[in-house]
Amino acid sequence: MLAKKVSDFFHDYGALIAPTAAILNGFIAVLVAQFFKDHRRAKVLLVIAAGVLGSAAISATFYAQHQIVAERDAAIQKNKEIRERLGALIQEGASLIVGCSDNTKQPPTAAVDAWLHKVEDFLNTRLGHSYVARILVPTSATVNLTCNGANKEYDKLVHLVLGVNFHLEQFGQQSNF
Image 1 (cartoon, rainbow, N blue to C red):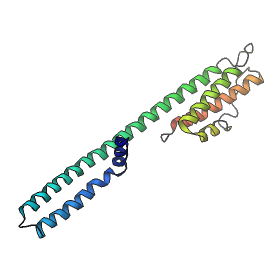
Image 2 (cartoon, rainbow, N blue to C red):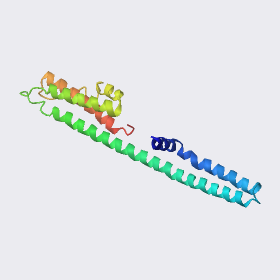
Image 3 (tube, rainbow, N blue to C red):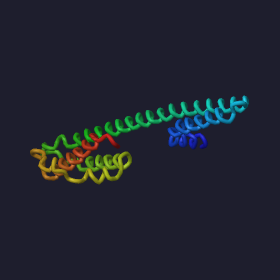
C-alpha cells in the first residue's frame, strides 16, 4: 500500500523533483559561499546534501521519462487490442449475412442478436456507452445497401449488420480510445 502511494506520488510529481533540487542546490551553493566559508564541517555537509539532491534530481528525471514511455506503450497496446477486437467483430458480423441472397435460408436473427449483444458489451466495457449509442444510429452510407434476392426480414438484418459494421470501422480508425 505504501509502495503504491509512493509510486503514485512520483508519477504525479516526479517531474517537479529535478527543478526543485536545482533550486535547492543553488541555495546551498550560496549558503556555502556566503556563510560557511570557514566552517569545514558545515561545508562538507552542505556539499553532501547538494550531491544527494543532484542524484535525486537525475533519478527523478529518468523516472519521469520512464513513466512517459510506459504510458505511451500501454496506450499503443490498448489501441491495438481494441482495433483487433473491432476487426474480429466486423468479420463476425459480415459472416452472419453471407448467405443473404439465398431465398431458402432463414435470416439468422438469433445469431445477429447475439452478435449485437457482444458488440454492445465490448463497446460498453472498453470504449464507453457513447459508442453503443452511435452504433444503432442509421447512416447514409448504408441506407441504400441491400442484398439481392433477400426477403424483407433478411434484408433488414443485412442493413443492420452493415450499419453497425460501418460504425465499428469508423471506431477502428480512431486512435484516441
